[in-house]
Image (cartoon, rainbow, N blue to C red; front, side, top):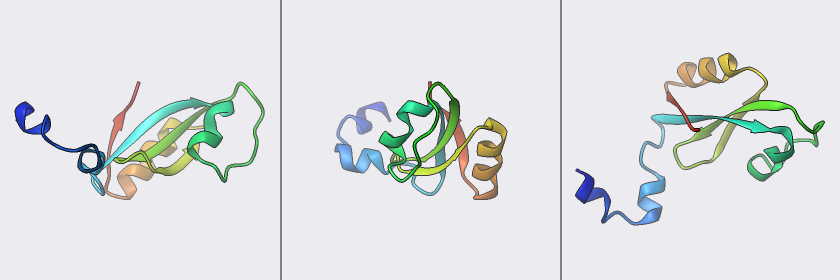
Amino acid sequence: MTDNLKHINSRTFAHLGDGHIAYIRQLRSEDINAIFPAAPQMERGLKLWALLGADGSPIMLSDSREAIVANAVENELTPVSVH
């Protein structure tokens, strides 16, 4: 299986898991606009949680990891953590 992944182009690789997997990632408020461009400016230093599609597209932002996980499950996505 690993050998097969070596031959996948980056665009195809980015879409593996689309509609099935969502990534949970903790972010600082000052980094939010890079991923969520439409988000309002926030106080610096806040720790927030983001739910991202398999391709990295933004789905949800919250101050609660539990809310992020619940949203993923509610939308039939398998949540995985990104460190």
